[in-house]
Image (cartoon, rainbow, N blue to C red; front, top):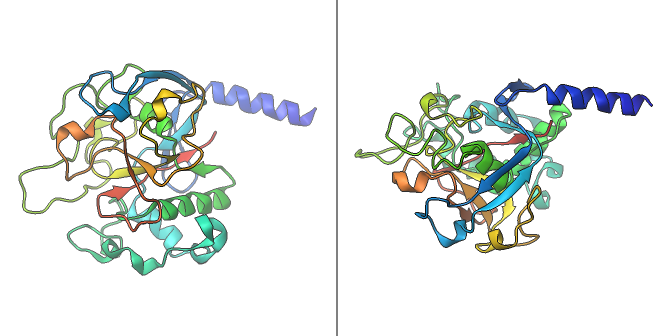
Length: 278
């Protein structure tokens, strides 16, 4: 009886949570995305065939990082004794801390450089992103994980099939993407507040690409489940979403799909954000 009562209390509390409402367990802000359906995929006809057909997906509610995981948040994991604990890592293989060269890169605002805490951590591979989520879960008692690509897309574009998180047109006041400069890199969290998604998530277009939990298959949309799709059961590559600071505006569309090898040491255009389950 107590368990049922606790469940009802939790359910009522969740029902009262408003879209975009923020929670913080000591590892950054996470915004609420309510349960419900949205149309996923390229409804503008300017993408790749792997972004079609448009299909209706229904998701449970979740919280997603308001920002990409920053150097300051990553440092908590990097400096914690648990970093080298195999239980957090896929295949029980921790990535050596010095394997990511961007940590000490001045032009890339690496986390080992002063005044860099608010910049996204760069070059983290999929294995490392998963380990971070597992570590936070252990620290907080809440379930953190990478978003599915369906969760990522809904958080980025909402339910009205917009092209970008903020709408259907783009300029540099909304996002960090390629500019006429000798060297460009990621900008700090919160710089592009005007480009927030319908739920308040920022930098979901441009800045850095973001890992998702799904295995990648170019034809997955043709047979994707309509309820909480998790991606194919197996694969060689993991889905990567969002554009980067090094790409043109067309590559920042919210329905764009690409992929990367999960254990590969990522380049400086790749980061991630996490999901927190209610």
